[in-house]
Length: 243
Image 1 (tube, rainbow, N blue to C red):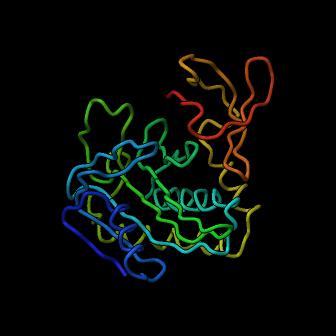
Image 2: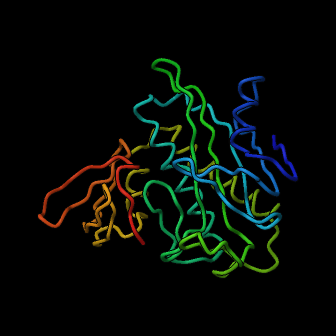
């Protein structure tokens, strides 16, 4: 069930409102040619030009997960988007923690998952996915954007075909998640982790530091090894990894 709009404030906001007022079937998708207030991580705005990119929000009911397992949904969605990009013949695709999709050192997709929990039950998740597809010119204030077309996507590709392909790839990983194959998801996610086992610069409390990225645990925390050889686990939002 796909609800498509030419223009919308935010596909995530519309999906949340839909859930609050009706009972949409799982897998209902809200898509738009243009979002005026597209949502990114930490309250940022996801920017994209009309008719050139994928902007979608998927309504899911992951009641088979405990609230403490919710980051596995984030991992599964990121793996689905990564697979979708790779199937377009694009190489050097990785997942920058927590769930941005990178081609080399440039960002092509962002994911924002908004969860609704009721007590000890994981009730609803809205998986917002924005992918730069055909856009070739970006706001200069965006630090490192890229798009699929800039990295080898066929010029004959249409957004409708790409949406269908994306949803198929996402469903593959959602079914893996439903079957609770957490170990497989962990292995695939960490194998895909951007700059894994490499030293990167990061910003924390106004200071720039360096550390080696190790892996991401089942709780979504990033494990790093600092300059003193100490291993530290961090929640996303505690640091900003610099490109």
